[in-house]
Amino acid sequence: MRIGYGYDVHKLVENRNLILGGVDIDSKKGLLGHSDADVLIHAIIDAVLGALAKGDIGLLFPDSDDNYKNIDSRILLRKIYKIMLDSSYEIGNLDATICAQQPKLQSYINQMRENVASDLHTDISNISIKATTEENLGITGKGKGITASSIVLLEEI
Image (cartoon, helix red, strand yellow):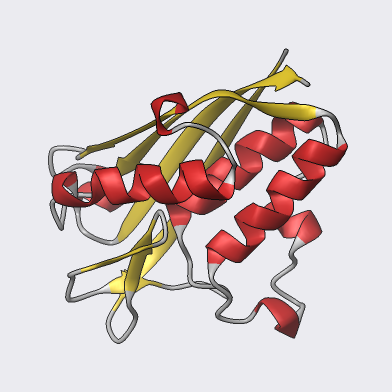
């Protein structure tokens, strides 16, 4: 078994869609980034890559490469699944937390779990996603950005 941890943060800006876990969230602001800036998927990617000791998202999908400009992060997650499978590992379980003051995310969580489970070819019972706030503190609490963290347990196939 191998354990990995991932973390990501992106700034909230006007005129961008807010995509979290591959779900288009109803929001006045979205996240700024080279790709779709899906902090949840990015944290999950880094957790899996960390468990495999294969670097991080920026190493595999650099923001200097226009092939990844505005790309759907779920496409990147599916590529990570292939790397995981080629390394003879599968998801044991994954736990992730999104930190955002607004918008409220509870009604979107199950769709996020379904998306991640589908992309990583695992049962939804192996995927936990939670949302929290920072009680109006820090960059997320002040509405300046959104963060996500993830931990994953990989099991050898």
